[in-house]
Image (cartoon, rainbow, N blue to C red; front, side):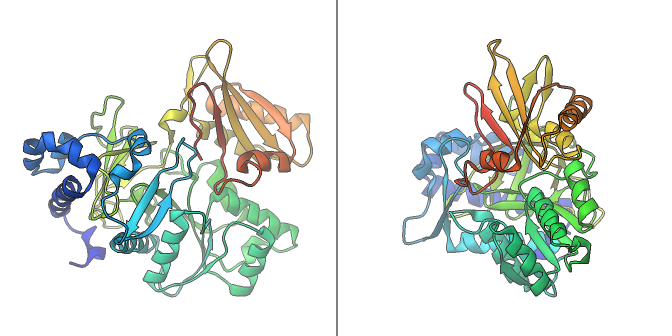
Amino acid sequence: MDTKKLEFKSKTQIENIQVEYLKGTINYAMKYSPFYHKKLKKKNSLIKGIKKMKDIQRLPITTKTQIQRNNRSFFCEEGKDIAEIVSTTGTTGKAVFIPLTKSDLCRLALNEERSFHCAGVTEKDIFHIAVTLDNLFMAGMAYYMGITQLGAIVFRAGMRNVKKQRQLIRQLSPTGIVTVPSFLLKLADIIEEENWSPRKSTIRKALLVGECIREQDFSLNRLGTLICEKWPVDLYSTYGNSECGISFCECEKKVGGHEHPDLIISEILDDNDNPLPDGEIGELVLTTLQTRGMPLLRYKTGDVTFKLTEKCGCGRNSSRIGPILGRKSQMLKFKGVKVYPKTIENAVLSTAGVNNHVIEVYTGDDYLDRIVVKIGCKRKNKKIKEEVLKNIEAYARVTPEVELMSIKEVDWLRTEGGNRRKMRMFIDNRKNGTNYD
């Protein structure tokens, strides 16, 4: 079967294929995963009855905490079969290590090849990769393998030395870039400081990771709009999950990230772990298919979004997920209003004069969330602070504290003095709080 054509098959055909792969994943996990062997052996009769996709609800939920506490018990292959070990950032507590076999690496490359194909990338493209490619980071490696497998040219620039990035863009004339949205903005500023316009670059397509560039209705949010104002490239939003070794990427219609149905099954669950219908907002839950090192069943990602299953305008029948609206654990309660940090972030980005920012939250004396937005700007202008507050009140319906800082001070907070491989926009200092990138 040509896997590139799978997503264009009928929904019934796609579901039948997914169910067969799901059965294989369950049997494999029961046999080789110490965690799932113990977890599933008592449910054997129920699992044998899985015939339709809705029967996935018979399987137990897997949480991040379970993996953190029992990481090695999720490993299915012994040392001779593991080709590489990667990890999460560890900002949610204890870092999770993910073993990858040779077949898992092939699966990772296949997933990214198809994601780039979704975004219209061809073998004629030249891609500039400006994401982390070391420190046990899966994403940079995955993008590199996917592009090369597609047949395009790639060069690995990483995220250091922004001026060097500008030089590479001028010398190697890439047609596309993979990076974090805020880094692309920073790169545009550096290019303008060098008396050269981003509009004159050869880059025409950007696949953006790690930060959301779309609103719930798929229109560009403030971050996405700012990028287009400075650098009018064709933007594609992607979402990836390291534990599951998977990513979802938009097609040219840009109405959600496409699921690769032979590699992953996605669900959206409510607070009681009940499935939600199309368009309803809840937590993204993933089940890996064709994974050998560390298969996961119904893994709760902690990310809040929604799912769409109707046929896409591009012709694909694969399910799609919407923009990531926030982290479930990041939801703030401020004077009776529920808000996600991303909503505050969009308001901050709409303010002229703001170069960078970070949002910190604390537990106040009244046991409610205290929000402090730290703004980095070239000049500590009182009018900027007033404008930030005005925009946050209008956009997020909350009135946090706003503190003006230098650009370098905010950068230090976002990277913990350069010790982090991913910049953080949100710092959770609440009692029992958890930091996320």
